[in-house]
Image (cartoon, rainbow, N blue to C red; front, side, top):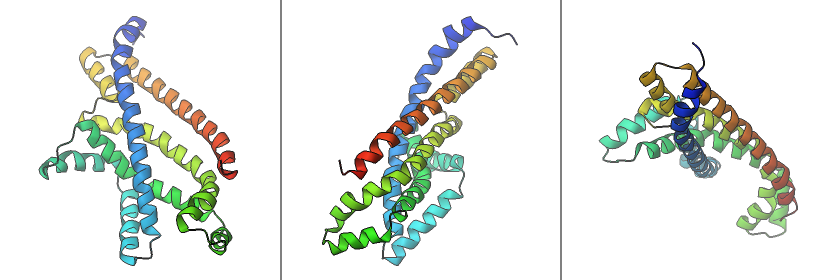
Length: 223
């Protein structure tokens, strides 16, 4: 099939760009939701309350072994049965946030474990309150190990958004499929989607490198 540039610029790109915004929106919102839930799961898993730690550990293992598409379908169809009605996009954000909270929790836990035990003991000897010890001593040293992992999680979240097309959330792949079904031309819309995903991944990787280069020294110097 010959590539049609007029079709690409006049039909494909104008229709896919709104889907690009949906992809970015869902990715960013679900990523921050995953961070919030992951922090809660990490603290719960480290809790001295055995039952709470058990529940957090089991939830993390359950989510790590569950395909994302199953979580998406479950929330999309089960929430209305429970009387909870959310717009499709927010259902996608919730599904991806809950799903990625498990790896986020493990990344955050790994960052805390990378801090030498002596740092906790030194904070205790210096009579730091727990919240100040965590913020001023432990957190700056835990930032370095978690940034690469969280960055990879963000890029992975971009690549997971096409699964939302199964429940008709208008992200890029869903828009490309609609264009293809209407025009019977698959090459242009799918290629444009692939290029946009590549650009998003590269931009995200550069952004993560910039954050890692600037944020880690500032945290280490207590700024």
